Image (cartoon, rainbow, N blue to C red; front, top):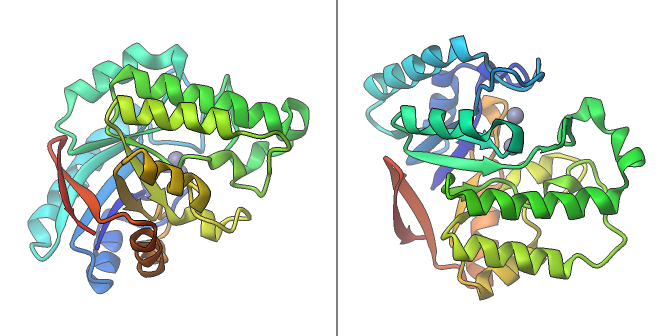
Amino acid sequence: MNDYHVHTYLCKHAEGQVYEYVESAIEKKVEQLGFAEHIPIPGLHDPDGRMLIDEFELYLQYIEEAKKNYKEIKILLGIEADYLPAHMSFIEDFLKRYPFDFVIGSVHFIGEWDFTNPLYQKQYEHYGVDNTFQDYYKLVREAAATGLYDIIGHLDIPKKFGHNATVDLSDEINKTLNAIKRYELVLDVNTSGLRNPAKEIHPSEEILRRAREYDIPVILGSDAHHPSDVAYAFKETMILLKKMGFNHTCVYDKRKRENIPL
Ligand SMILES: [Zn+2]
Ligand SMILES: [Zn+2]
């Protein structure tokens, strides 16, 4: 069992040190633990969303130390990099500069609105839930086409706070899965939705079923923002994936992907 999506206190809206996530993972018999801290972006106003650029060396240091101290688990250096059209040259350079094992591409923003931040939930009313979902999927397709990412993070995240689209999103979703397939990306099957008002995984079972038809690979992520959430609900999620016909998951090493049995 591998968890390829955990955060740390460094992002300012999570609790727990790197070693606490590692110890929780070891306790839960996780074999590979992928840290995917939010990428620092100078110039983006996001005070509770991510570490500062000056704190990044600390992240690298903590992970290096954990690799030395815990030989019983494989620890990976990942990053959750946003797709932010206004900041792509910075993001591209940043991703080249460090030896990441994997890069999760996530859409959290529409323009300057972080629709995943509980503080800005009110904006769904003004922007419109349908618009939010439609613009979101369009941004995911753009993200896929950049070729900068390995994994698409928590697809269908606009449902996080329990919002549902009133229009049929089948076309949007099909186009998005097409792009994910074309650019050889992997889906982050993210169990954070089970802990949020959405009360279901990202992406939904319906989207996962379609993803299976497209033969898109999957990887599990808890999106833990607390050490106790490492590998959250993984056993039942793995059973669900197998039932849907997924036989493989992926592992990464310096951005090289390998399939392993689920
Ligand atoms: Zn976060
Ligand atoms: Zn995210």
